[in-house]
Image (cartoon, rainbow, N blue to C red; front, side):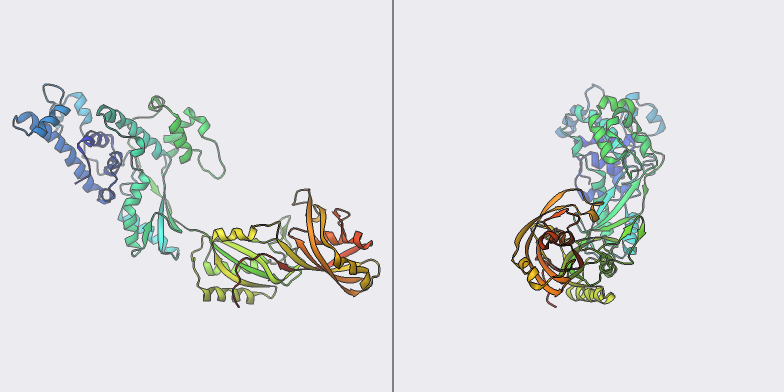
Length: 541
């Protein structure tokens, strides 16, 4: 039995007459019982035929038998307003009987001979042949071929925008019937094609994948896309009636996106719509086309700390005017083994600040994080993560990684929290133009909380906005090396340009070491000794 009521019968007959498939009829009758959609469409169609045939039998019985039950009498009183009942509208009529029908009644007779083969005027075949065991096998085979590791999956469906237009047309077709019968029914109550498709397919796909749960929310998404060759044709009139809803966008093959069409349908009046588009929709000449199945896993986030021991290694690939300047980078040396282990399609690399190509990063290292895009593997246990860390460290003597771990997206924000308040420690090898002794630089050790005004350095002016930034050097210490060289240790606010503080950058950083020593100074080497961010959590060696 279908979960339909007496009030649904005129709607069912009107929709079947218009060329709707059985499942779309259920949708417009607001049937929310999922099991009803999972029945084979041919079986559901037969039940719908029997449902409306029962209506006609009731009418005939009511006029021929004065001894009908009170219920039948009351029903006849509702559906028959004339003294004489019209000829019985059978689901299948003999040609002679059909010819004898009055013109108005003949229009509502359901010709069901070709119902099973013709393409639905609303869903364009999506809830017919494109929705069943064959499609489930196609989806399952595509998922298996891409070798993802997952426990659950969510099914997403992309539909051609014209379905919104056809559904609106069909809604207007039954709207009059709904109002005449005094029924309380709104367009928003109609079950969406996407929902019906999922209700039918979820169990079938789960079965083909060996019982994997197909749920409403999962880290692993399987996308099914349908297109139709006449999509723009069906929507074209909206561009004329609601031109402000359709604007060309980048990377879009058509201006008739689903959102734009929905927006236009909300604006257009029923009268104007009916003037430009047939109601009910015309019979399509072809069904939708199922495109390649797309699989997507949500990003996995990896964090750790890295040391950089080389003075000719950039943090990220160094490309100038389209030409690569260095053969590798910190980012690439770390990313290659990780991408391989998680079988990800790509990555985004970020870190707590960055060092220049000629600067080493020592101590506990610099915190970094990687977003792995569409990983086919999403979990590694502690032992596997340790092995991955060792693989990275063995791959090059230029870098070393520690505390490698999987983190959440939310945890990544910890790395950027208080960016300006963080402190960093450095050691710089300084050259002086004039000879010096230990006592000449001793006073520097006593300088605390020195505030600098740093105009954007000349060397980064091509990529950073011109501005004067205030930064603080919290403390400094010196170690005499020879009459023209000494080591300068600094603890500073994050974002301080150390090189510019040492040589002055032609007076763009004030005060600077040249001014403090009253002589020209320059920086020969620079090391980052520590980045004081308590993240990610340390992992014992």
